[in-house]
Image 1: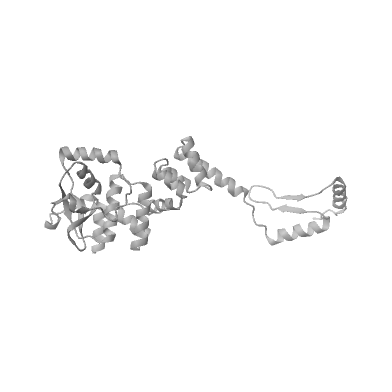
Image 2 (image 1 turned 30 degrees about the vertical axis):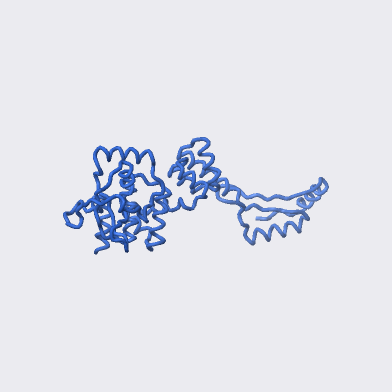
Length: 290
């Protein structure tokens, strides 16, 4: 029951996480000195946009910090607190030269700290696709979540979680292009189906291709690669090839019929004399009687 309630709280969004939907005394905001706050260990975002922080700092100078930070106590440090949600506001408040910020103090375990930090960034839409994928993977690896549980915790579909995690399978060079903004998340997902994602990614950047174009190129390359791949011949076909090779004295290859096209029989020869001999032998073969 407690677990279900916690997941419902995550699903309702940041107002529920910060205790704004109830009047519990322990959820009431208080002010804490900025120097007593520490960045969250489970912050999924690795890069903070400098221009965006400056704009937020200017807003804070004019209007203050409108939404309190969510924090928890640091074990063994009576006067230090770890930021669970709101690190961007904390950084901007420092730029604005504030000495204190409003916070909500909650008792939160490590798993919930990661989930809340992930939800906050997802709802504000300022988390990169790779940071999102790595956060999902941490929930799977460190807290034994299933993909379904992760999806429920962050309010996303299971397929979204699965497809996002797959971005971690891309080559490192492609992930760097994604992290630097040269590729969008849509581009990256389309590259997952490519036989050579790195080459295609370089072409995307060079030509400025959109996602649909990348999907078509990836599909075309995959189809061509599949068509070129030789099919394993069955034992009966190989036996007939061997028998005909011995009978005719030259190499015989059989390409079996497949859906939509006829099969082929190829007979090799090295000289006109050998071709004449093959023709004589074939003419002596009696016609099949139905």
